[in-house]
Length: 111
Length: 114
Image (cartoon, rainbow over all chains, first blue to last red; front, side):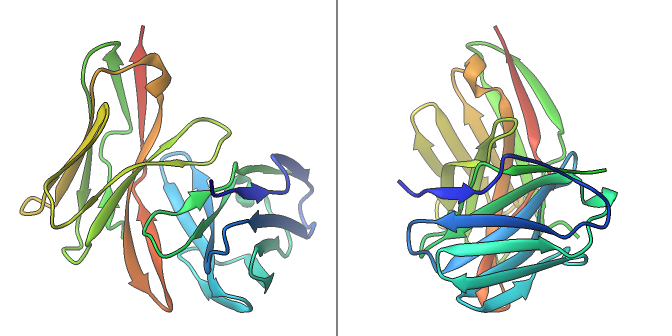
């Protein structure tokens, strides 16, 4: 079974803090993704990576950056957290098949 | 602009009856479609998929139908069970940049009433 693990289930951060969300997958997948889920908006892609040190912007990259130093790990960074970044963050990985496998999600609240 | 649309934000169905969740898409180049199920405070889990060369795919209680001329797909759950209550997302892979991504609809909250 593919396992995608996100480092935290729940986080509360203050406005202006730098926030790191970590994601690890154990299936040697090339592709990894960060989405956020908001009510009525579905899953929106923030960034993705198709190889180590390679990254591309998704639909809503503003205010975020990413890091992929190792194949199994993909980190999402909120440079200066703001209240409109309060959301559910979902990491996913995908191999050769079309379906992506998701982590359990991180519910981030910025106060 | 959303390429995959789910126009019904919610659906309530009685236990044992059929649940039909709908999804429309705009990109005729999509060659594959997926359905995901999501419980609160959990990540989405893959449910069932269909290739664009087929018009139906069945897996137990779940069947997905694809109507390419109408650019429409639907997920049928028969019989519906209370444990099926979740948000359902349809998704399609597309190529952008150097990798294939998944674009998702906005989701439909299914509630199965006991």
